[in-house]
Image (cartoon, rainbow, N blue to C red):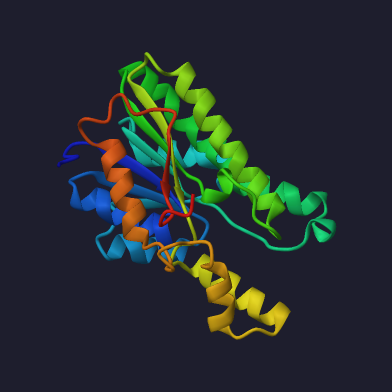
Length: 251
């Protein structure tokens, strides 16, 4: 498989799943640009040869992300746009105020909306493109103590399904990938948070996190990246409006 000559954009591309996606797209021959808020991490990722260039931006700000795309595109449209940037905050519902919900919606949903708004027009004009949201199994079922995050990821799945219907005859596909807990710094932070709040050891906190996964393990970021390659590659033109689970058979 080759993506030679194609341009790809990955938000949150400096670490974790985003970094793995950028690396996979680069190995496949794509020219990859990455976005994020941590300029030092982005710079290191480019220096490592994982991406071609970067632009710091806040995906929650539509002006910021639009300006970043203009700067990186240099007049050439992006063929692939991966909305990977996201965040999770934990807490029981009764301690999750409206600001907590707004934060989760802003980064997980609005960040995806802003990227798709910025990348889609050029794809429609060229009648080809791939829009992919890195969502979560939390986009399909409920989990306790992450109601705001879960609500936001459900909204991302709804966006993908609706936009796929709008673009069905345009040559653009719109899909989501839904990993379970992945082996990233976000999962590490969640384990540390649970351990600190409950008094459990890190091993006990991780075991509780993985209890619903039949394989009993964290998902490797490279497994998510492999799914991205499939959705971007030849033979995937009829795959749109889908939500690909990478969850060890959880459901």
